[in-house]
Image 1 (cartoon, rainbow, N blue to C red):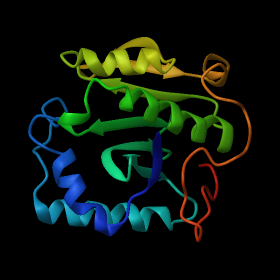
Image 2 (image 1 turned 180 degrees about the vertical axis):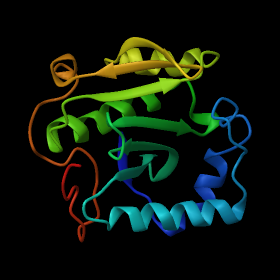
Image 3 (image 1 turned 60 degrees about the horizontal axis):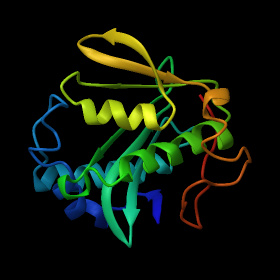
Length: 179
């Protein structure tokens, strides 16, 4: 079973494996080094404590193993998602399930009207993830293929309720407010 949970500083080693050269090849960034992974994990934990919250940076976990990161960016004109998986987790449906779970947070819990996403044109696997999760292609912008999804299109992907669709730590609220 796939779960999304808040990242914690102890996830730095997992982040180092996730943000490898192969996984970042279409992101326009270098792989993470150990110092950046530690900083990233601390920053994700600090972001979770902010109110209002502008960014959800959640670990995608299977069997207590952090396989990837799924983000919900609320600080943009149209909220957007992004995701990355460790190379050995590709092609197993984890990214699609992680995207569906973050959409449940976006639509069912936060009540967002729309979410966007994009991917590099050479990364067709990412496009398949988005379309399987219910996104509709909208064109191209700045060299990336763009997508959008609205709650009616997502209705069949998850039940509409206000429950927490991911595992928030007991001491934190799953969301504090929308932008």
